[in-house]
Length: 119
Picture 1 (cartoon, one colour):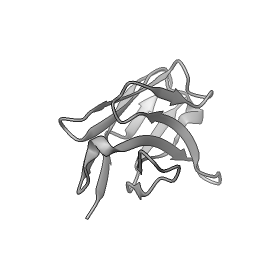
Picture 2 (cartoon, helix red, strand yellow):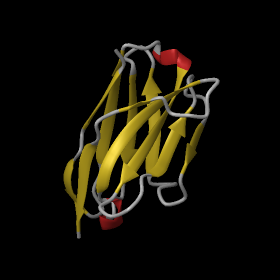
Picture 3 (cartoon, one colour):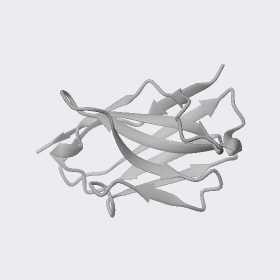
Picture 4 (tube, one colour):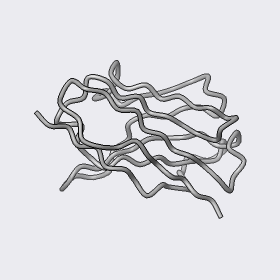
């Protein structure tokens, strides 16, 4: 079965950095575009970043543009989210998700990893 497993979350001070990883299994990774989302307490899940199957194109939410960078290593079936200059408002559970190239729907989701930014 398809599994997406996030790691790398934790507690960091404002201004610090974290790198999240999402390891995929049970699918042909190159056939999927990958996204990162987050959900803060009491808020809806929001889109953060997206990366094309080849890694040749990316897109970001305005709230993280210039601070976060998404990348992928298809040889390792892994997508990354480098988060710099973190702010308390970035505190949330972060999820990775996969969608087939021909789809607009994310078919698979990870279990999430907690990121907490202290002020």
